[in-house]
Amino acid sequence: MIDRRTLLLTSMSAAIASLIAPKGSRAAPSYVRYNVASDKGKEMLKVYTSAVQEMKSWKDTDPRSWTFQWYIHASPASKDTEIKKVFGTSSSKEKALAEASWYTCQPHAPQANGTKTQPDYFLPWHRLYVLQLENIVRQVTQNDAFTLPYWDYTNAKYYAIPEEFRDPSSPLYKQNRNINNGKGYANVNGGQPINQYYLEKNLPNPLALPVMQGNEYSDFCNTLDYGLHGNVHDLTGNSTNMGYVPTAAGDPVFWMHHCNIDRIWSNWNALGGKNPSQTDGIDWSTVKFTFVAPDGTALVADLSSVSNPATLPYTYDSLPQPVSANLQLVADSAAATSPLTLMSSAPSHGEHTQTMKMDSHALIKLGQTATTVTLKPAAATTAKNQNRLTALKTGREKARIYVVLKAVMVARNPNTLYMINLTLAGQKDKRFVGYLNFFAATHADTNASHGDSSVLFDITDLVPKADLDGLTLQDATVTLEPIGEPEAGSDPTIMGGIELQIR
Image (cartoon, rainbow, N blue to C red; front, side, top):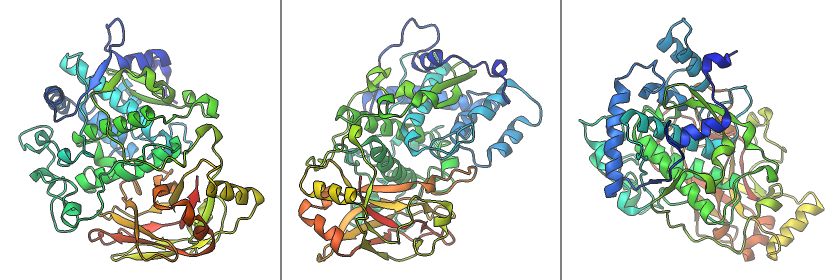
């Protein structure tokens, strides 16, 4: 049991205030985060570079050191192993802080009290993580105006990793980023766009923005996490670097990446997206995590402290331009209902359980070549479901349509993406659904596997209302094809089958 006096925990209000403003300031200033390629962004990057160099020189036992901050996200070996290696067997307040804060990345690790991770925590946890690092950099550099810049990789001008990260003499450089080996990856440190292979082969862009309007928070968070977010991780580094949860935060570009993910979330809010709140029956104020204050002491903050976009201490110099969405079907968070399965690759088993993982009827193994899966119409077992489907066809129900991969797992990252295409009954053309990445499908130190959650792809714009009858009467097929050559022994598997759902 960690003693409160040992941890020097602050109150919740003081915690978020510490994240927002440097100690000694009278009020939380309004900060602006800039594109790393802009003049202001380059100024901020120089400050960041100085801080990274300083933090890398400190002992790993210092809570503000680079390694300590990295391990808050996750660590290469298990949490217990790394703590023993860094701190030995003796007790200290720094060790207690490591025990409370290390390997708490959401949703890749269980919460401190041992409860299961929640996919919805992905965005607010990383927002807090970025904020506390940003504030530490201000303290380290004595530059209260500093803000972390973002890498705007959804813009074609900035597909390549920023040039400052490619300089071998810079503390921002990592040698083990991806190389162009003819298997789907770019020469990242050589300055190629990280989606170079896709551009050369005229494939759909893995750096495209997700649907930004008309979806509920949980579905938006899922598609961003498992989609664009994971794609950038895998396209930048392999399983020793950005392509693996335990090593990702060791690369300085990680923070530019997550600034941009946060920026995309901010834009979703600006376009009308609503975050979970107590009025929706979800209380984030009780979900707390431990970080590090600028003075190196423990800082505890809850997710609700950063869930209201109107009270954030920063803005962005610009927001991304979203892909237009089919706004005839608009999700209403307040009126959300449970998903309705239209089609399935496996017999119905109800909620996903441990037993279902072993069900040979549901399990889909992906290989070195394309895998085609047949989806069969699911029976409308209740009058309520049939009424919902009728309402959707007539436009009376506000909902969206998703391809859902249930429980994606791998033995290790195959270091390639899989392209997913959907073919509806009676049609020859394949419709591009998205890319499946495996960034978070396996990791070393958690009983709460990220792969236990479904992976969602919004296909509302691919399925006109006129085709909805076909989804309930005739078979469809989903094809999953590796872009490069999957690594031997990675064994990518969809444990719970594939479904087409109204959500």
